[in-house]
Length: 416
Ligand SMILES: [Zn+2]
Image (cartoon, rainbow, N blue to C red; front, top):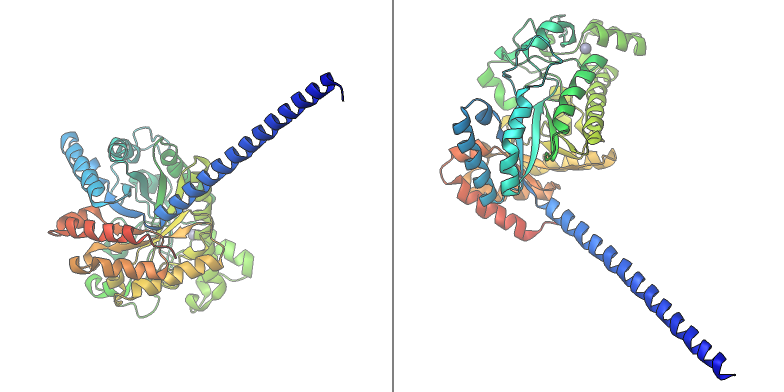
């Protein structure tokens, strides 16, 4: 081999080595980045497993003069952070809206948006995720009632829920989920929240029919006898629902002797709510936000009491069953039973999201917080949620005890 050739060969080999090294470094880099992403995903999964949520009424912000609202918001967000709460679900549209416009499309000064915008700086300041919580089919804004009385649900006696005050509650006015105009109206309401920059997600509350049967522990205090479903409380028999069901089955549901025994009629109503929920989830996702809902305690009780088949809410990111067990006359251990039922049904239906149980602080004695969290965890709850910040604040020493319990919960780093 000539010297020049030899040198060329050596140079060639040198560059080949360089190229191999470059490739090696490139592969190592990719491997390292992949590993970092994997670790970060695992960490995120782990923190989701022990994420602590709390509900907070926005009326404290909306109904007070600005200076008081500012103090209240600062007070609650600071305490939440100190206690270990990671996310706040803020009620922005409840039973008594201030809006009384005659133009339902004019929501430029819509109170819900104002509440979110007032709370967001505090969420940012304390590093807390903020979710906007709104009532869904239960809508009582006066302008809507006046403009579209036909959108409201009708009971099996043929009476609109606008004409009877169900359970003597002024706010019990319910939109029919079968009407396309209702879906469009509600999509607009969730969209105006979902598009707010800095908000983490939207929570759909009251995404159901009015109570055909109230949770059992409330019958006495509300003065009702509900040993079965009575027509007064059984909805929706509006023209649209009756026509839809007749076209589907040839039966007018109004003529059924025992509507609850008719599987197809029950399924029709469950499906109407499910389709509405999934449509709203899609709208929320359009703005890149998490779509979530608060639902009754267990799938079986929800279907029976409020015609809500929430284990079929496949498109939601998080489903929060309100396991307020004493309202169901249930033992404490039922928190675990109800949670597990939800987790299993969601898995069977291939739900995309996960379940996080909500505990009602009035049902969680101050010396047994750990025990109640453990029931939910054993049942398969991902994270834990407390209703509510104001409720915690009312019970002496609860903040301190809750802080200890949350620290313990996070230390355990629950992995199912
Ligand atoms: Zn209807």
